Image (cartoon, rainbow, N blue to C red; front, side, top):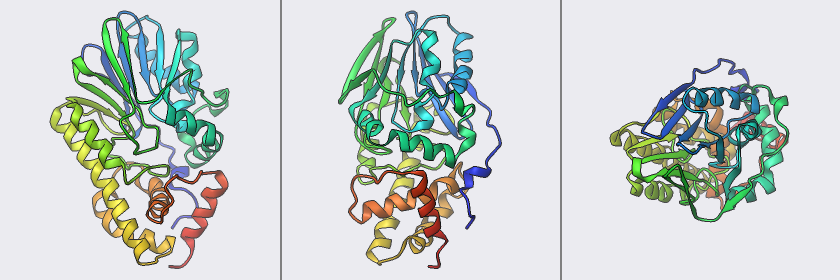
Length: 321
């Protein structure tokens, strides 16, 4: 195994695509890098996930400005991870009124936002272009518990916490009249699921709740826009398979008393044939296996990732099995 994270050497910038999904909904996708969502109405604009830095947010703003000059009134955080939230300051000059997050996301920012910011940057520096432009942690200005509804330009927008999965605070944005869903990292397509802070046991039930909405189009956290009901179903099935295969392998490894290195080898036997070819697989797998083994060992609340803990994990994975 390499002596550094797979992502440190990932320097190739990904092409972004801005796609209209319905009358008011757009997807900003990035070839396996983090996606964002946009809802454009006659009254204003809502952004789903702020991107990683204010400078990177300017690229998304430029796409929005090709379509509308209305203010960008809302930013919704699908979860707390730095790569999703630290660009929020870039929208303030565009008319930003509220940064919306779930109660669980707010609690995670309080508990571990600063550590996550540093460790994510050190793991995957390419995803944080102009890191110095970040003024600090992003704090929500409006926090909800289970669900809230916005009406903007006559468009009903539901912001919902349907259950834990990728994190305990995952939030989706749903436009019922247009059957478009922005899922954050609860759903992925053609990209690995990062599960370092996941609630793996509950994740499949949250996917069931997403499926019950009946979305016909979906922007996943990573990967291409899913623009038909069949593609949406494929994305849900793919994510369920990834999470279930990972957690199932971890439970087997714990039952056999395997150490972390041995658990990695055991889990790879099931994971590699299905997922080795997808975006960021080698980057995610060490963190995924570590969290899955923790949860299978009874550690329900994910341990905080710090830059130092990243290094300790990497050292453990170099040890003989």
